[in-house]
Image 1: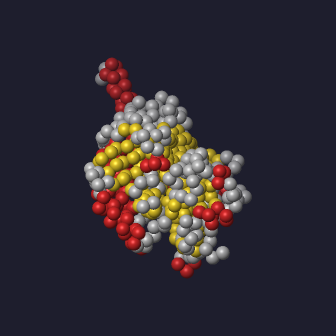
Image 2: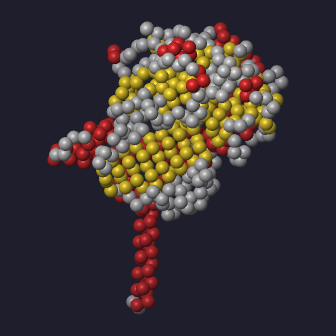
Image 3: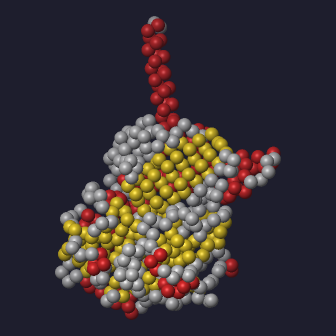
Length: 478
């Protein structure tokens, strides 16, 4: 074999080894690596729409309100009527966003006084995110944010209004659809007014008791507050950290010894296997003086904090990246949520997207938990998870993985609670209404601190920023 042939053979062999090495690195680093074989400036989508199961899970309204003859009824998730109304609402929004709509001369205060159905998303969402979740193929580049919309059935058609971050938009005289035809809407309102306990559920009569003039700068014009003085028993639940993290926390504070070090190795290995899966051998393990645990390689850093929070950072940040499509960015965020949630058992609670922020070079997705269709508020935290991602990769993440479980029937806490607005104001010594900045007021679960907690219902006042103030809920047995 000639010297020239040998040189060519060595070069080809070296290139082959290099190629295989990069494939292995790309494979084992999953979606958090540098992306050697991924296009760095990719801004298109690699799918037409999200899987329906994903959008059904992560895109659910905070509440649906049926207003009839100035009587509002709140239809909450978990009720059959909620699902039917939401499915038809998605189709209506799909039609509107692919059509022609215009800015309305009406204020939202004027719109929401009509009979109809209001769908409150719970926060402001970019219109392109809404299109992604409902499967609209049109790419609307309007740039506005929608937090709620109202469908008003009429004799000759229905009108649809969107409440945005700076205005109200309308789509007039739309062909009646599904439950929003005049006859179907009247059938629903007849059912609610005649039988408030329809379908073994309850629809609480609520109304706004404080005038817009009083709360003009503090509260949404259509926020609904409970006048319900009846008693409701809401089951308490356990919410705790995954066993793998609990094991680590219980060991890290112990005095160093040979047996303690062996237990520590087992606990760290268990977390590493669940969190990093195939790539766990590519990360080194580190500890700081506060007992926090780190897994690090060239581009990625995971941190398991002593209080159970799990964070991730892609160390180069967004350098060289573009924000790209919101669909690809959400897919990366979804994969990250699944990865960190893998630390918990099958009783993970129900995560939903509670907000989306469009940054200059990325997107930030906010997630929160629901249990028994009620939002779980975490003490001193606005959200259960924050994921910042581009169309190429996740840039940073922080999440509290939780397990949820029911109490045994013989130990269940059965305390009656009252949802009434005035009662809860007095209970919590809230005397100045102008001190409240309310975007949502509702009953949820809270709070979480420590490794294993029994949590019960609380009264939550939420601001537009997502900040949640947690208050005691009036008991009916006191």
